[in-house]
Length: 261
Ligand code: GLP
Image 1: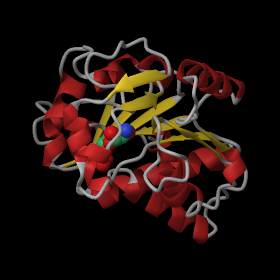
Image 2: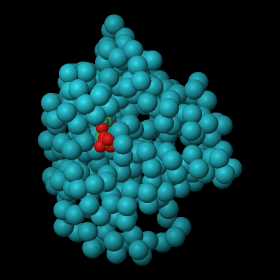
Image 3: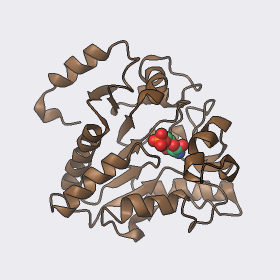
């Protein structure tokens, strides 16, 4: 896995947006896997600026959702479908019909999960999957203990994740659903390129466990160690507990230009 230490969230956003832009120039119909949360916002903002400037064409781009709350109507402002419409599809001028996501309101959740796996496969798989990380090391909504081979399925959120996400529900943890549908870790690992962005001191322990800890279900993000093309972009605060930080800096500073992210 490659670790890139950037000065701040904005620089991380710009770096990843440029990798997405390069992908779309190479493959205009690329399927971008996107994440919710606060961390990826600088990526979407930097990519939207490129779209507005005419530096990248998103007219054929496709977007796939990583996870969704169970039971929130899709028009609820905090359903991830609504969040992604607002934060990704609209600013990036991406056709809403080019959006793939699981149905969090389905009466038959296992069937909805299997259908989403099928849709992803028929679409040819995700080209670049952007990931955030939970303070407990989750990716998507794969909480600690998730099988490293898991597929899209229902999960129960930890109380910590519900507390972390309460800020999107008027600070009221009781409004945060208990259940979610998430791409499994095995599903996520099938994307061609995984890019995890983590910023801030609050993510430093999770980042250290992901990059330098053992491969273990207790830190779901450590599964990135299994992927042949995984990039972890961190700001100085999120990198603060990495033992090999100087080596990662040296490696990136001396990277051959042709290699890209
Ligand atoms: C949620 C999402 C994750 C995201 C995490 C971190 O739990 N399901 O995909 O990575 O939040 O969010 P933030 O970036 O706001 O810290």
